[in-house]
Image 1 (cartoon, protein in one colour):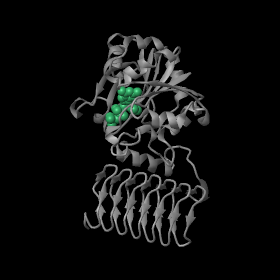
Image 2 (cartoon, rainbow, N blue to C red):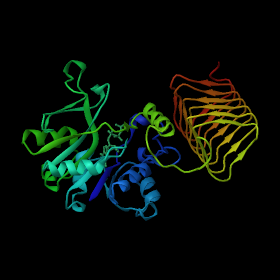
Image 3 (spheres, protein in one colour):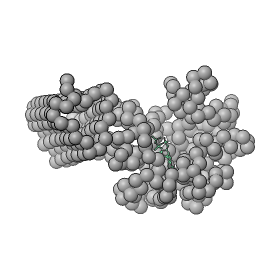
Length: 370
Ligand code: GTP
């Protein structure tokens, strides 16, 4: 069976982390998010994958190539301009001759894809949509099903007054090729707004597959941080690089660690990092390859991408720092701050309250004071 992963979106809600990197390539515990999705597909013996790409396509193609380094065979369906989730699937029609799976490229889930395919076949579905329960369905596409699991209604982002179920579209579908006849070719079209309502209206056999397995959409920075938390705390299952050195501490080769540094797991440290005297790292925390953490600095529940340089007596807490950024001495980056790539922050600044700094910016010493 083939799978198509939709990875062409701009990831605007995850900005500034997605200014230089497409959302599927943002690192999750030191490997691109899309590698985790491919791992999950392989677990269900799906190794023929089509990537529907559009935004920053070279970054994805250059990393994954033909897929052989990742144990899969990859084909690319390229859009010159975004065709939407439906248009992207239609654009890959020539590669899809049999029952196939579609996945949004920003969801991480442990759910049993093989069981979902079996459900689709047992129900003789032409389309099956995965459903997951959430506490607040108003930010999602809500799907009503009947007692036979047949989809009755599809409501995008309902208001609280109109909410009738907490089951939302979990972004994984099993489809038969003939439903592609309902999607117009070469124009922008969304599965959620066009194809799915059409399937219901035309009484095509369209079913909802309900799962309570772990599920998260990394569309916004809070959920990107939450996924790290959940993987490192063992709530979500994922493989990541690093050798286990002690309970809940994983370190890749080439790291230099001062004996006085204290690591309280779960902590993952990438290749070639330098951790200086008196540093304290409290997990869940991840340091990408080539990071340097200066004397006396504290890291708490934070994610550093590659080649980040933290000065002395600095603090990074519940925040993300992107590639090649430099944080000065005595500077705090706390409470959901998102510092993207190639940023230089001078000494004695305090960045907090979910502040987001775009790539390439510089903040002088003492510019944002305590
Ligand atoms: P936002 O800009 O923050 O809404 O993110 P997004 O557009 O990247 O993601 P969204 O949640 O809207 O879309 C769900 C999935 O579909 C993501 O994995 C996107 O990459 C993908 N997607 C959205 N639009 C397109 C498109 O026009 N073409 C392709 N190939 N994929 C798309």
